[in-house]
Image 1: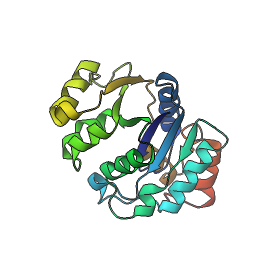
Image 2 (image 1 turned 180 degrees about the vertical axis):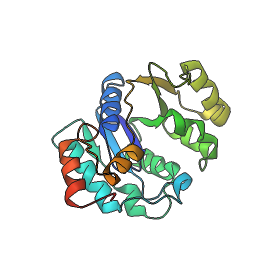
Image 3 (image 1 turned 135 degrees about the vertical axis):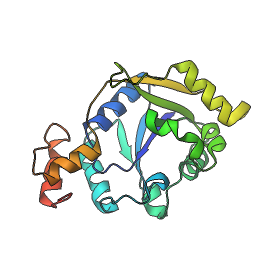
Image 4 (image 1 turned 60 degrees about the vertical axis):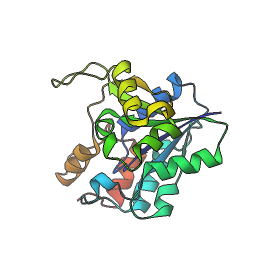
Length: 206
């Protein structure tokens, strides 16, 4: 079995998350891609977020009917700060024979050395860094060699083989969506229709 985890706050989940997940599923030939919403991200602990129940429901609405994807509440159920190493340890226990991947954006990858037990993180799963093809904004995408070099520097010989996965450039973010909602601007096209309806019905981000 080939399984990948995609973690994040998902506040709210948007089409960029969905397209990145779809691309990863195809390129990595996955049997399953699991969305793992955080209870509270350690590096974002002072930022307000929607309640876990809302973020879980929006994810459910976004992926419903798509057999490629599933949702795991493991970090929400654990409560408190969400540490990736704990989640990967649990998946290593659950699926010891599986080929396990952990998907991470380039921005989060840049802060990997600040994560709890980063050497263990890169040992427990093949790190897949989602880079943005097409560049832009004066930023240069990471190469596969750069990703490998950094992961080896963190994990040494115990590190699982990482890779860079060019993702289509989708200029949308959860922050922008929240701002648009607060300004009473439309968000259809940024999120799925079901998620947009949920945000409106529950008056989130206003």
